[in-house]
Length: 274
Image 1 (cartoon, rainbow, N blue to C red):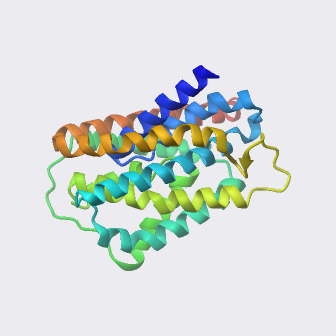
Image 2 (image 1 turned 90 degrees about the vertical axis):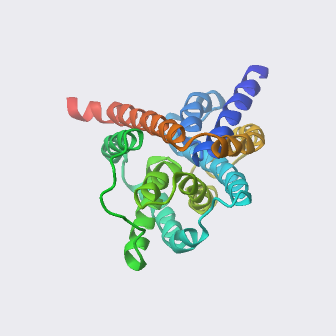
């Protein structure tokens, strides 16, 4: 038990620093950890990923809230962008939670994994922009926001892993992109976790101290060290050079991509063989 608590603390602390520094909610760290840990408390294999993603989203809600608030204190959040994207992100998150129950996401994960590899390479080795780009307006921006919301839920990633490259591509300075992505991540994760907590199937079998797909002991064990370390990540983001921060984020995206491709490959391999 002491070892498990120590692992929770270390994992939560790592997620907190990552959330503050890079605008990530930490799902890429938490989900693999929970996939390893949850079977030990009786979560069955066929619902393991659902529980891991739902519990991780609960943590993302907390880390994104604290990270966004700290970035706001430094004046880094571009609030007009948040306001424009809010409705689309929420609608996308709602669609994502219901679509996730209906279709397997392995093929989409594989496709998106290669996409993230391309994004990470461009973040690490950016090309000089020939023309200025800006965020779209109206229906186009709503479509982009909704698509990002759907992908965040289906792929089990935080909004930062999608929004930071997108904002950066639209010429939002990297520091502002990270801060704004932290705030935008909050409504996506909150929408997803509410649906997965209170609209789970009636025949769902979960360990004690669970609400819907969310396993509360794991969530509570991770959330305190996570919140405590978010301000450290934010201060690092303020002090590090933009070029170094860009490369750190590119490395995180690369790890996300490799994880997606590996997990999707494992799921699809039997189909290819058959």
